[in-house]
Image 1: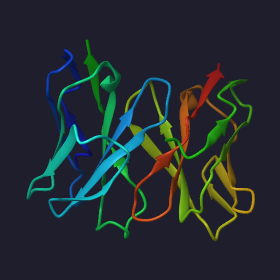
Image 2: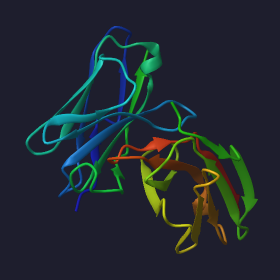
Image 3: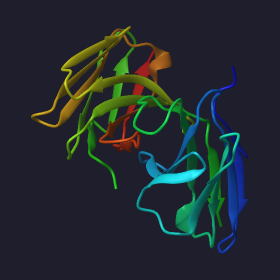
Image 4: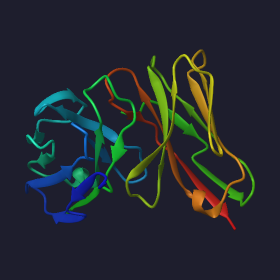
Length: 115
Length: 110
């Protein structure tokens, strides 16, 4: 049974560009959350998707947007990249609807470097 | 913004010793969870303790929760070199949005 998978593993972009990161949840999971982890810090919640809709959002600007597909996979899009967007982006999935599950399963992350 | 603080920021011990990490948080919670992260990659869930629980065990892990002091501790007994990692506490108020602390870096020397 595959766990949470993310692609790509590493990515290098320049300021002002746009980036799309992808996540496939663990089998049987329908809720996907995205987190940003800057170097030396704990992860920060970006947003969460369930039933193809954004259900919760953290304190991130509108440059950060997402999408969830009918197969529960998800994308994170970041527009107009800034140097400060350089971080490890983590995707996490959980088995049932928001509010009904506690444990989240994390993917290995995508390391984004903005030059 | 981070929910709280982990203490210490870094901890270095010998194999076989116990490691204790503390976590403080600021708001009411539904539950508190501990995660491990190896070499800046994905996080692995270790243990969850609910707001109405005071202590929980899982293998070599023992977690306590004091909601009156808004604090939790993670004890790893008989540590091994493979326990070397960063450890994060995360709180949940509603839904399953995790709010993480800054983490404790644990190094276990063999």
